[in-house]
Amino acid sequence: METAVSSPIKLSANAIAEVRRLMNEPGFEEGQYLRIGVKGGGCSGLSYVLGFDKLEEDDQKYEIEGVPVVMKDAHGIYLMGMEVDFSDGLNARGFVFNNPNASSSCGCGTSFAV
Image 1: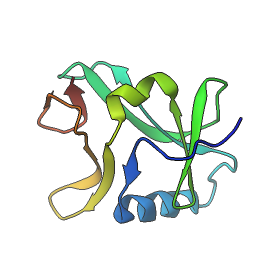
Image 2: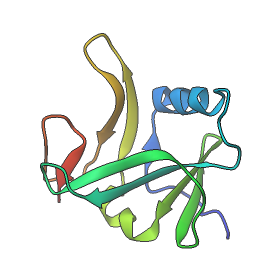
Image 3: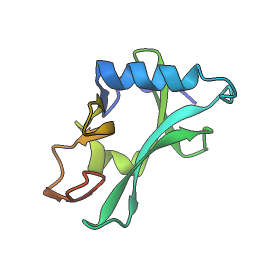
Image 4: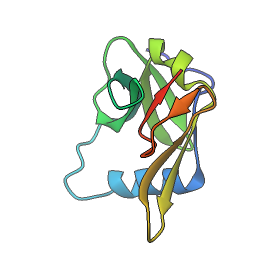
């Protein structure tokens, strides 16, 4: 499977640093990719998927600043132009999804509607 030229999503410098930190944790299973996608559910209709996973046959493969990323081709229409950030503040810690395709999102920022 060939690696695509450009990724439909972006990772901020903070997100890249956090993903690399997680990948360097003891017990991290080699050969896994950062999976970004969507699934049905959540309070706004679709929820974001973000986690480490194995490469599957129908995945598109990208590399963002040395981070191996996979995504189902069909998810690109929902995620095109999205930036994933990581917040390490006192009030909120975690990954943040800035999706220009979302017509609305829930208060927690993990689900959206298109």
